[in-house]
Length: 413
Ligand SMILES: [Cu+2]
Image 1 (cartoon, rainbow, N blue to C red):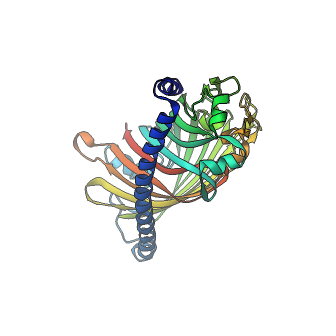
Image 2 (cartoon, rainbow, N blue to C red):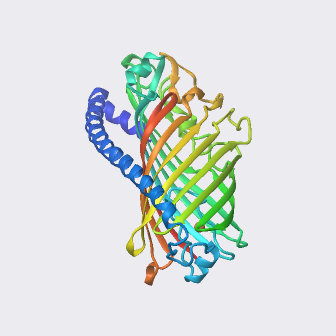
Image 3 (cartoon, rainbow, N blue to C red):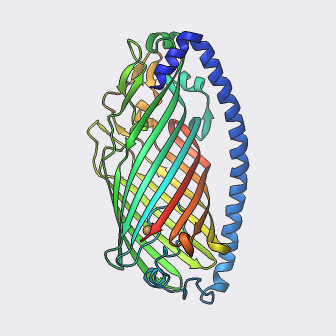
């Protein structure tokens, strides 16, 4: 769709003008964005460190004497939620994390999350690289930026006091901007336009998770989760792409596909220590691909993530959260069916190659959520969560992530 518009514009006012306008606009937005994120990143890091230090200093002296706001400190999830007319058991975890609470028997919860991920500029390992540096490594096309929006609809139900089931469906909407290495190559494969955009949208993979909650007392809660990810997201999305003979409808690389194409196992363990008004927690989780390859000849890498956070309960139902997350993911294995590996400069696009997937990253998390306890707000929980990168060491050449924003709404029935 977008490429049609660009090409039509290109014919009217010339591709060079369009290209210059785009570069100019991108330069300005990139400069302001870098300034903004750098500022936020520094402050987020300081805030997180300060919170963590304060909490560890606080933890021991208050242990066992602080009254839980919703009851005694060793009150299990079941009694808290029941005793207070069905609001969500006080979940102090950042709202972008899943599987951080269980429900009492017979309780339902509906949730909606909106996530926007912004990526701008390429990275090789932990260093930023320019488009020209990508071309110098033999690629014909480089991604320059990407936006991914994800709408997540979740349903939780507890058949017993120990087990909670969670179903989650996603709708994904992605857009990626690219640049071709030279005008001559653009003439050969893209009708003369040196930039193009690809888009894909639709249902993502669906997950079904069982959570088992343990309450050993003293405000400690342990939740073990085991999920199964079903390959409901399409991996055969296409868009107008450059290639020999000019732009045509062609298969998109895995980075733009909506699903993984494989059945994945999602184990997780969450440990929360609630010392109201403070709480802190740890979550370890993974994505294990249960097949060697999907129907299109590849599989994405396994993922391991570890998140630690602290939260502080403010008056009037507000909770502030801060933390850090480490994530490691593997390369993409196999060869993507229908995705060309060759171009006029040698290789096609970075996303066609499995070595340009996965890597290690550390992100800072900062969030605020609000839990309604009376009137029409009773039982509603809304929140905002911001993730900013502290460290990224990506495999091969990939777009770096600049920010992830999550908005969330939850309601218990
Ligand atoms: Cu829930």
